[in-house]
Length: 248
Image 1 (tube, rainbow, N blue to C red):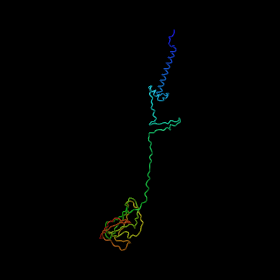
Image 2 (cartoon, one colour):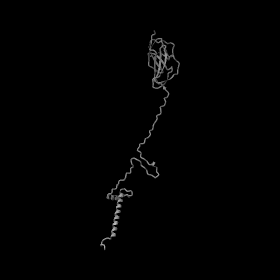
Image 3 (cartoon, rainbow, N blue to C red):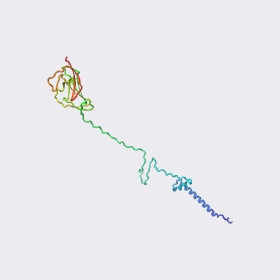
Image 4 (cartoon, rainbow, N blue to C red):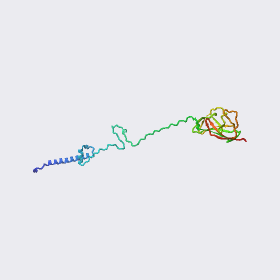
């Protein structure tokens, strides 16, 4: 039986269906491959240019255009990649622990030892006279004591030789007697006086007058009140009262 005019042979029709089916399968595979590439597949080629990005957005696929941040992390360790033989110890690290700086210590030298005592100035010396009794009868020898005291804060040195110290008996402004008038022997007595230290020198007064050079003509001091004044060189101490009473 003859085939109708215009109809394709069956073999041609089958070949066309096979080609159409294969083309659909290849198109589906290409579509899946393109979608995988756009979603970050490892083998996907990079999409460059504005036109390609626009075409993909038009197809419903969104491309992120923001570049990844290049700043290093705030904490942790930054590893410098080098050759395969690089030592891990060469990788710098960011330390968040503060470092302490050693504090320099200074030492103070001890003060030098004190030097030798210096001479005592007149302003720190106190010269006074005391009597063993406040009164004596005429004809009895009063016992008098000279006191030399260092009233300063430090030790000092002073020459207290016999020729520099004396006790005087005064009647007003008249000098009646001095322990130095009849004592001509020179001495050498340099003493170190500590603060508040006193040196004492005693003498018994015969109750008679005297003068420089110790003249032989001397008279007995009558009953009355007199002043005792101590001396050390140019220093004169305050007066102390001594009373002589009439003999019984």
